[in-house]
Image (cartoon, rainbow, N blue to C red; front, side, top):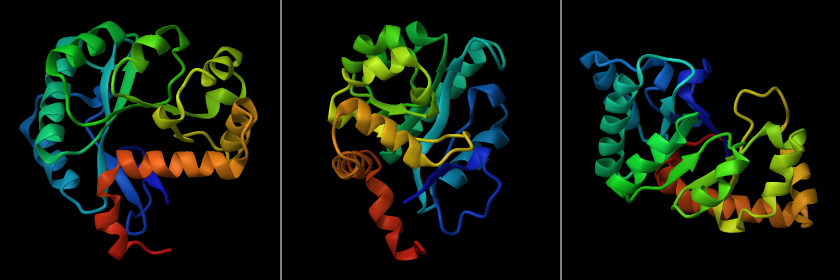
Amino acid sequence: MTIVNESDDNRGLGTYFFSYGIHPWQASLREENFLTFEEKITNIKCLAIGEIGLDKLKGPDLSIQIVVFSKQIEISERLQLPVIIHCVRAWNELSNFYKQRKPQQVWVFHGFTKVGILEEVLKTNMMISIGSAVLTNVLLQESIKRIPDHKLLLETDEAKIDILAIYQKVSEIKKISLLQLGKIIEQNFKRTFKKWQSGLSEQNY
């Protein structure tokens, strides 16, 4: 199965599950943005809200990002959709938000490379999604061993590589077979993106 971020992908989504969110780089308080957002996330193929989050290096003022992020989190709780998190140098703000709101829906920490905060993230209900950085980032490779199987997801994001390369590296690090790793990721995917079953009748293989 494939899940793509519609905001980052121009392909027709008829055969894809997808996520949709107002990215912090495009955060705006314009009402039409939220109308489009609500329309997209009610699509049967939309499995999650995201990427959304906070970014101190790019995008509008953090105060605007927080308002937009907060509104999307409220909707994620109401519609019972998981959230794919984009976080750049804003872990303290994101962590405080998480502790205050105590969200019931699963958050997926997208493209995780921040090994210095791994233990803090593991104390939350967040899933940790590892991408192509694991192929070259030695510290991230070492941290893989500390991520429990039930917290792990894998992704390619925008990297022009085959997802198999990431599976091979992680299976090598964890010292398990590709088959074992595949079963772990499949179970985690189905548990996290629960709406996937509702779209199967329209999914083309």
